[in-house]
Length: 70
Image 1 (tube, rainbow, N blue to C red):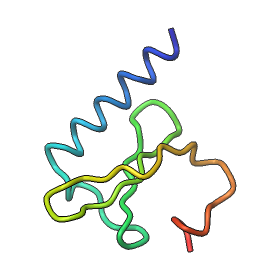
Image 2 (image 1 turned 30 degrees about the vertical axis):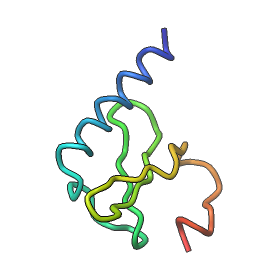
Image 3 (image 1 turned 90 degrees about the vertical axis):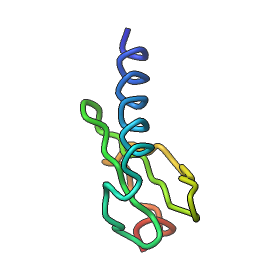
């Protein structure tokens, strides 16, 4: 049951990113962080031309990664 709720939350966020790719500011250029509405995860993505490239779906309370957080 929780998996279905997580997938629905992630699909909703991905649909928002697809509709508004510049909807989230660059926190660590070129990466943008789109938080999920219910779960404590973020979708880390970048814009490459007209394409949206998703690099990671990450549980945010984890230890930061240098690639995305400096």
